[in-house]
Image (cartoon, rainbow, N blue to C red):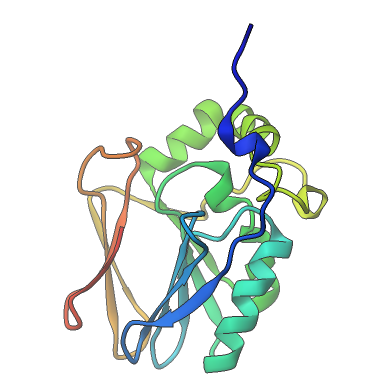
Length: 184
């Protein structure tokens, strides 16, 4: 007899929060669900992790639009798990120019992307309630890096660092050195 994942029975709606961390950074959290980070520079917005579906991403986009009208140009995948990245397509309508990930994250998408997508949609019914909004196929990074990359959002530098294996081999952190804010 096989055990069912606890997440399969987790259908209770979670309370979300959009918390200001500094003049440039916000955290979108949902009681332990996959969270997202938002960084706002003078010229552009960066979103770190996109939520599970484009419909869910719209909730985060509404929060962003309450604090800025700057274009969301960059989406960063901190690692590959479907629950964190399948909402990425929603950001193209907002002007996203790049989906950035470490090369190791890209390789994980190649290696097990479709398998993880199917598995997570089956295991997390609450998070994938709007699975029909996910376009066919996978979300592919348009830009990859190894080790370190700096993105200028307009008078605000964001350092993307792949600091070693933690949760997955592709783990990336986003660091705002001047503000001492880290998204991990």
